[in-house]
Length: 123
Ligand code: F3S
Ligand code: F3S
View 1 (cartoon, rainbow, N blue to C red):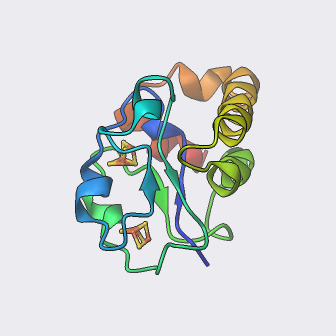
View 2: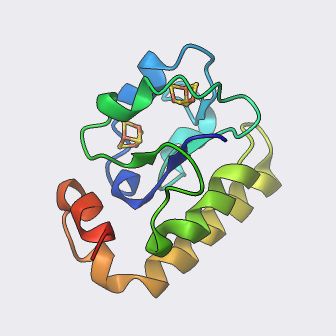
C-alpha cells in the first residue's frame, strides 16, 4: 500500500520528502523540468516501499500512509499520485487536472493555509 501526498503540498512543494526517500519515488524533484509547472508532488505507487521516512519530513503533514488512511476529502488525490509519471507529459497533465478539480471541489480547504490544512482534513 503506497503512501499518498495530499493537498497541504499544494502551494508548498517543500521537497524535504524527496530528500529522505531512499528509493527516489517522489516526483517531480527540483531538478526535473516538471517541477516549475506542477502544483504538488506525487508518490509513485509501485516504487514506494512504505518506509515512512517522508511522513515526519513533511512540514505540512501532507503525506498519508496508505490510500485507506487518506481522508475522504483527499480521495481524488490518490488517483493523481497513481497517474503521475515523471517525463510523461500526458500523465503529468492528467495528474494536474485531477488536482485542479480537487481545488475547485474543496475551495473551503484551499482557503486554509497549507500548514493548517491537514488538521482540517478530519473535519
Ligand atoms: Fe519514499 Fe515515503 Fe514511500 S520515503 S519509499 S515515498 S513511504
Ligand atoms: Fe509536499 Fe511535504 Fe513533500 S509539502 S513536497 S509532501 S515535504
